[in-house]
Length: 145
Image 1 (cartoon, rainbow, N blue to C red):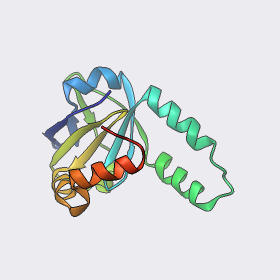
Image 2 (cartoon, one colour):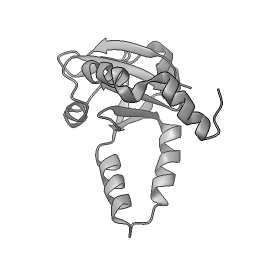
Image 3 (cartoon, one colour):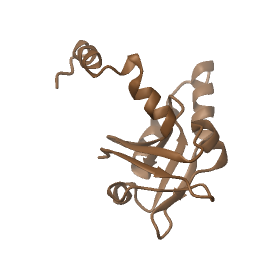
Image 4 (cartoon, helix red, strand yellow):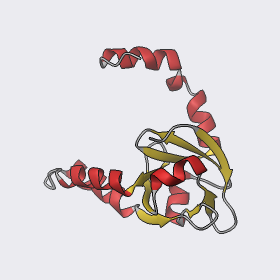
C-alpha cells in the first residue's frame, strides 16, 4: 500500500527520486502513465495487470471506452529504478503533468501519483478539496471513516 506525500525535483535528465518507502512495493519494473487531473499514475506490475484486464473487458464499440483506453495505454511506459532509486519521466508524460522542476509524489493506496508542485498546491487549496465536505460526500457512498 502506498501512503504519504514527498517532494523531489527532476534532474537535468528528467529523473526523479522515488521515495524509499515506495521502491519495494513498486518492484523491479513498474508502469507510469498519464493520470487524471494533470498528474501521472505509477503502478506496480501486479496492479497494472489488474487494470489492464478491466480495460480489456470494455466494449470496443463504445467511443468513450476506445478513447480512454487509447489515452491510458498510449501514454504508458514500463520503468525501472536506477541504482540511486530514480525513475526517468518521459517527455510526453512530463508535458502531460506540466512538471518543470519540483514535483510532489503521493501514495494513493494501490498507486503512486506524481504532480507538478504548483498543480498539487493549487489542487489541495481549491474549493473542491475541503476535507470536511469530501468526508460528507463519502458518507453518501456508505463509506464511514
